[in-house]
Image (tube, rainbow, N blue to C red):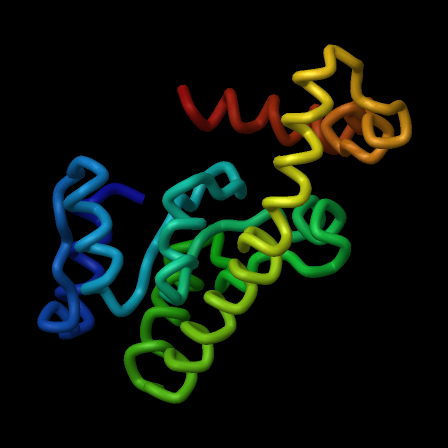
Length: 173
């Protein structure tokens, strides 16, 4: 969806006073944007989040995005990021309206997002892992095989995944 398409949809539904569409900025200004926004929208094409979604989650913002839940549920052992999944303009619109119209839903999503981030990426979870990995690297040893086997990125691609990527390449043209 282009910025102009999104703007048109917002205006045609009479909710333009609820939105402030901003231009891309650097990291320092982006942190201010996270803190001042009510809803964060990430990407709607690939289904994967990056640092920006994690940063928005860290300040407790509800996130609307396209999410490959099957992959993230596997990676997080059933505890995928609680983003509001949307892969069509109509779904994006429904999620936005629900969050705008229902403050209790928005506040609940804010709390849920922050709790998820702390649970999965907070200091108690990541520091022991990072210290162990740094120690392993410093010692010059390879990762133990049982850790390597847990990495879903090491699995062979399924036919479904290969078809998905072929379709993405066609859509990107």
